[in-house]
Each structure stands twice: as structure tokens, then as C-alpha cells.
Image (cartoon, rainbow, N blue to C red):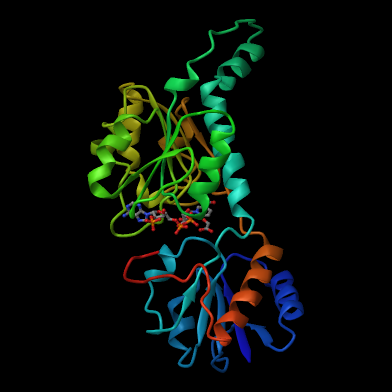
Amino acid sequence: MNIAFCCTGIAPQPWLADLRAALPEARVEPWAPGDAPADHAVVWAPPQAFFDAQPRLRSIFNIGAGVDALLGLRLPPGVPLVRIDDGGMAVQMAEYVCHAAIGYFRDFGGYAADAAAGRWQPREPRDRAAFTIGILGLGVLGQRVARALRQFDFPVRGWSRTPKALDGIDCFAGDGGLDDFLAGTRLLVCLLPLTPDTRDILRRETLSRLPRGAYLVNVARGGHLVEDDLLALVDDGHIAGATLDVFRQEPLPADHPLRVRPRITVTPHISAQSLRADCVAQIARKLRALQRGEPVAGLVDPARGY
Ligand code: NAP
Ligand code: GLV
């Protein structure tokens, strides 16, 4: 069994070593143009030329949660595409979103500015019961984030494509549920996959349905957010501010307006990073399950886009 490793922007050696240790029955090699076709592929942002040279793939493993970039390529038809589900990312996403939400709710940014200016200025506590946090996307990451936020007693609601019933979470679904979901959300978190249905979902029309003074956290993909619409809504006060981890263009250009707005915090796509040990163990387990003809979690439906 030959496994080709083709991951852009990732140092291959530690991954190759770990994959070889986890799958001693396989020959795992970094892919180079001209190599013989492989049986299985482990990929992250591969070039189209990689798939063009793979006539006999039996499975493709994406070492991240999002497959939007991959689905933009011509993939060999009918070959199972498996993404990482969780892979150490869910708890990181919960940390990141709780940090952003609590930082805004408690105004820790304001207190940091006060401390730097030598001010001692306690503020009135905000009403937690009125601070509903809404999560777009109730999948592996969205549900983990929802559970973490509930630990702080925030009212939490979520929106998904198909209806759900989750303990302690107010669930909304489908296009018909979006307006009601947004109308009661004080802090909006985006954890959707980027698909034709969700591209530009964070635009003026939808963000305007949030109550005035709402806050945005986008940790999904830059393609969800129409950045100019957000900037305009922050300028007119409808949106109080935002924490953004993902951007239309990454790295975010040094002179981009999102970098200099005082009420916008940016981070370099680090809210949740695939952890190598978790991912390698997951790939080995799923590859063997596929070989036995068993179902695996994280199988992507190309028609659905995630
Ligand atoms: P997931 O398990 O596939 O969950 C996706 C959720 O979105 C599901 O609840 C799904 O609804 C919902 N959804 C999809 N299309 C929808 C639509 N048209 N309308 C309403 N809901 C829709 O994905 P995940 O593992 O939680 O990851 C989510 C995304 O996070 C990834 O795709 C990736 O882009 C992003 N991500 C970002 C980082 C980072 O560092 N910034 C790290 C990891 C992942 P159903 O439950 O009904 O299917
Ligand atoms: C990271 O953004 C991922 O999709 O895993």
C-alpha cells in the first residue's frame, strides 16, 4: 500500500515519521511530480497536478476540518474524501471563542486600556441572561463551543442545516430559522463550513438583523464575511466590534483596514490547529476502517460541500 503525502505549507518530515509509525504496513512518501500513482493520499491544499497524476486513489484524507479549497479542485470521482473531525481542534476552538466572548462581555479590553492609562474604573456588571450567544454551525466544533459557553451560564443558541435537539441549547435550522436566530443573538459566532450556500452569509443584510450593538466572532472561513459590510456596520455602531481569525486574503495584508480598526481584533488563522498526533491516529484508524468496508466519521459529501 502506497500513501502519498502532499501538504502545502506543512513541514513533511514529522508527519511522514508519525504516519510511517502508525501505518507500518504502508509505504508513505512525500509526493513529487513524476512519482508513481499512490493508493491513498494525505493532503492539505494540494495542487491540481497532484490529483491529475493519481488514477488509482482509493481514499483521500484531508488533514484539516474544512474541505472548501479541496472541493474547488477536480478530484477523482467516487473516491472517499475524509476530513479530520475534531483532531484536537474542538477544545482549542472552545478556548478561543470563550476568550473572545468573555473578553467582550467583561470588557477586559477596556480594563487593559484603563490600566495602561493609569485609570481605576470599575464598570457595572452586564446582564448575562440577556447576553445570548448564537453559533452558526452546530457540527463537531460548534457543539463543543456551545457546551463550553454554557459552562459560563450564557444563554446559547445554534443554527444548522438540519434540525437538532441539544441539551441546554436553543436550536434553529434552515433558511426559515435564520431570521429568528439572528434577532435574538447578542454575540454571533460563525462555525459553518464554506459552501456555495454559506459563502458571504455574514453580509450587511444578515448582520443588520442582529440587535444593535451585537458582536461578531468569525472562526470559520474568510469567504463567509463580506469585510466591507462589517467595516461599515462597525463604523455606524450597529456592530460593536469583532474578533476575526480568518480572512478573504491570508495573510491579511499589512495595510488592510481590518488591522487598524480599534474595535476589531485579528489573529492569523490559529483559533484551532490540527494536532499531528491526533490526526495521524485518526487517519490510521479511518484508513483501516475503510479497508474493512466500515463507515467512518468525517466522510465528505461533495454535493453538500462539507
Ligand atoms: P461540521 O462538523 O461539518 O459542522 C458543520 C455545521 O454547519 C453543521 O452543523 C451543519 O449542519 C452546518 N451547516 C452546513 N451548511 C449549512 C447551511 N447551509 N445552513 C445551516 N447550517 C449549515 O464542521 P466542523 O468540524 O464543526 O468545522 C466547521 C468549519 O470550521 C470547517 O468547515 C472549517 O471551515 C472551520 N475551521 C476553522 C478553523 C480555524 O482555525 N479557523 C479550524 C477548524 C475548522 P448539519 O449539522 O445540519 O449538517
Ligand atoms: C482549519 O482551518 C481547518 O479547516 O482545519
